[in-house]
Image (tube, rainbow, N blue to C red; front, side, top):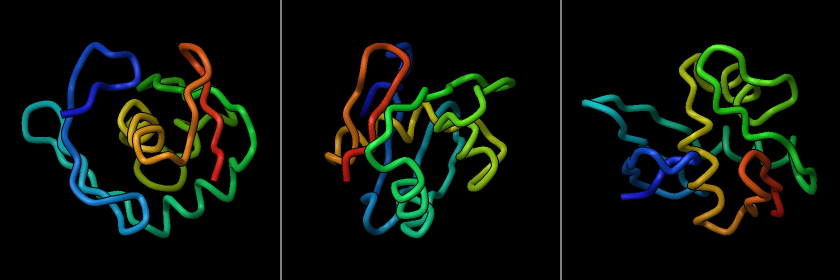
Length: 103
């Protein structure tokens, strides 16, 4: 179990960023993020500090959340993807709202 970005909930995931992940959250919700999608996200944000953008309805432009909604799924999943990136060493948490993709 891993805490969401805001720390209010927990979720589970299987897999790795390099191979793709199956994210399980809420009551039976499931989202797959492919390895190619993670690779594109990492290339797009590499060495930049950006807002995570966890809003379900209004993710800030140029945020991780807005990118995920445009390129992976309209479902707001930044609150899950950001902690996965940090846990696996692809990102650093910067305060409460920002993330830096480091590799």
